[in-house]
Amino acid sequence: MVEFSLATAANFIDEDDELDEEPGEVVESAPPLKEGEEREIRCSDGTSLKKKLLKLGHGLETPEFGDEVTVHYVGFLLDGTKFVSTRGEDQPFTFKLGKGLLVSGLDHGIMTMTRGETALFTLPPELAYGVKGTDGVPPNAATLFEIELVSWITVVDVCKDGGILKRIMAKGDQTGPPGELDEVLVRYSATTTDGAIVSKTAEEGVEFYVRDGHFCQAIPKAIKTMKRGEKVNLIVQHQYAFSDGVKNSTFSSPLVPSGSELSIDLELVSFKPVIDVTGNFGVLKKILKEGEGTHTANESTAVSIRYLAKLEDGTLFEKKGLDGEKPWDFTTDEGVSVCVCVPSHTHKMSYFTVFLENAFQMNKL
Image (cartoon, rainbow, N blue to C red; front, side, top):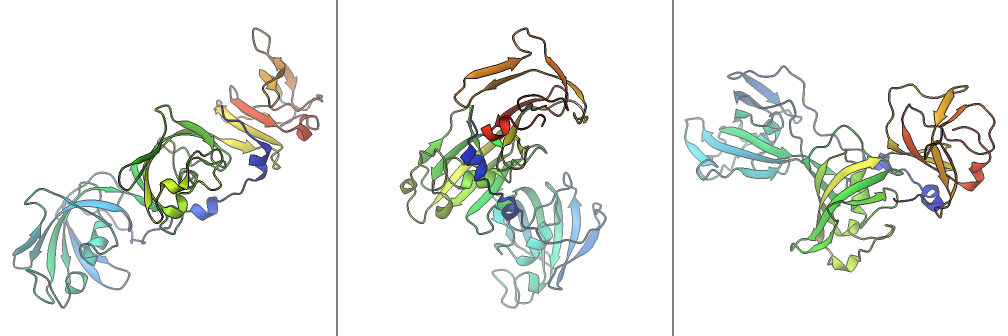
């Protein structure tokens, strides 16, 4: 089991505010289209395009600028002449929204689509090929594009500088993200651009505190944006591939050539929340097992607990309610000679780290 250190707690710096996700473009809310219906989509620059729904998709989520989308598309002139298609070889096209890899109007249109949806977009020249046109498209020509949104991967710029791009491969549950003090269990595999593995966990994963970090700077920063069970791929630039400041790292930054990047497949298997009970890192509570209900012990509450107490070196100096003994029954406002840490919910199991200066000063937490 990973243990706390006083230095770890005292050096805690909350960086969560730096990791807030950047909002995507705001799209006006409107009732969902029905198959066969058409609607105008207005862009922020005053231009507009038309969307006709051909086939309903699945769910309610839509991609945002920066996400990696996979689509099939067929482009037509208004007279029905086809000038481009991915259908011939049945090879969908994958690109990042907002980078202008197709035409700008399609970026705006695809943002309104759900997974599996097919729609027909009518683009004015200024949102398509403009005054120059392209092969098969005359100058100043309006165009039609039939788009099927096959899938997409959400991409998050973790540090807002392009240094860590997180591609969400599998969503987690609603638990998380972990905080700086929390203990996490992760699996990962890190490779260079040529496919060489530079670090990989065993199947059971590795456990560490977020604040301590692990392997390289990118991993703890990304973890603070993840939910339990989430699987991601990180594209890590050189400035975040270093192990500088990461506790107990065996990784040497020269393994990554200057200016190159790492690809890290990362899974947040689980995590244990850690709470600074006293506000000064004197008592830290790690939740090992969640309790039942919402009722918590407060002043003058009769409680029954089992516990064992050890020194930092593992020496057991006290235990109650274990190995056949009866649980310890007492009232929370009773005077006791040592710090008594009372779990807040019934059947909740917690691990407390109590630093010496707090151990004999407090009778209840």
